[in-house]
Image 1 (cartoon, rainbow, N blue to C red):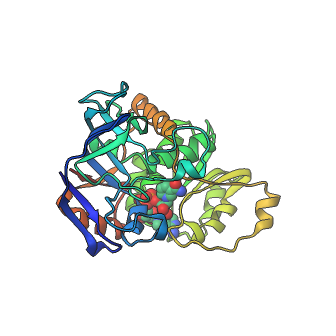
Image 2: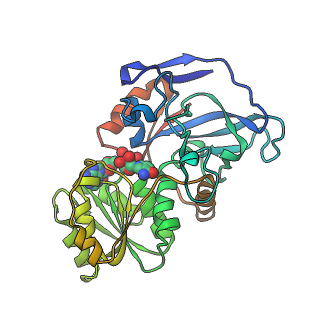
Image 3: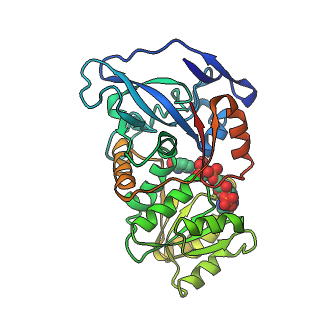
Length: 336
Ligand SMILES: NC(=O)c1ccc[n+]([C@@H]2O[C@H](COP(=O)([O-])OP(=O)(O)OC[C@H]3O[C@@H](n4cnc5c(N)ncnc54)[C@H](OP(=O)(O)O)[C@@H]3O)[C@@H](O)[C@H]2O)c1
């Protein structure tokens, strides 16, 4: 079977190779991976950006894939050949709150990922694919959509009438937009591009702010809410956006800390967080149970992920370069 293998850190060390076909052991499932998708995390992984927290040599990259069951090992009754499945980002995090043990072994990081034609995975780290999704669409979901689900639904408890602010039009932010709309909230979408903002409007965004032409976007967001502030900020910008996020959120509101796209270190005004009773919560993707809950909602409501481009495996480097350039809207996928 064909697989992409990162022999060592650096995109020049990414090779497409032939590997022996794997066999499922007890409790395991052999999955034919039909599609995969890229996340910002993968761009760092290709550069060895996670240091000792990623497999150092011969890593099969990417956490996000979808496909169908080829065969099952002894003791597996939940799946049969032909079933369509999506693997969980954290195969060891089945349910409940995270622990260090549950967060170990993330696909495409500490453990091999899914950019390969066949992959053996534990049966209880797989979730059925909703019938409304193609494999390419399903492959867009495990990391970015579970993260958005954790932020907006599980941790955020966003509900009807709330105002949610999303940053940029990458994978996490567009899923956050879609889930906030499912929950009955209104959404203020921000982007560096007016063209992308119009696409966000088509996905349901109620208000649009270009964060490049309106650098003080917190003020614009507060004006939209009549001065009250937004209920929830889905924070992916990090150092360059946190101050605006704190200014944009209402008294008692929440900020989901998800990404550091504009840098990791920031000095911010602690008194404002304290006196405004702001809740800041880190988010680390989510469990298999959260993947399952999110996929059920996607199936029931017919949510369609925003898939920007699909590349064949042989052109994976072009896909990485396209995403690195930041021109994408939503997800960049690989067809296997
Ligand atoms: N904690 C977790 O569990 C978790 C899970 C997934 C991702 N993440 C993190 O979340 C971030 C987004 O990941 P992703 O996969 O969704 O990335 P992505 O698809 O590559 O999205 C990147 C987009 O973010 C926007 N952006 C870039 N810099 C920005 C800034 N300074 N302010 C506001 N928006 C900015 C841009 O949108 P426009 O072009 O529209 O401006 C860009 O296209 C990354 O930092 C990633 O590591 C964390």
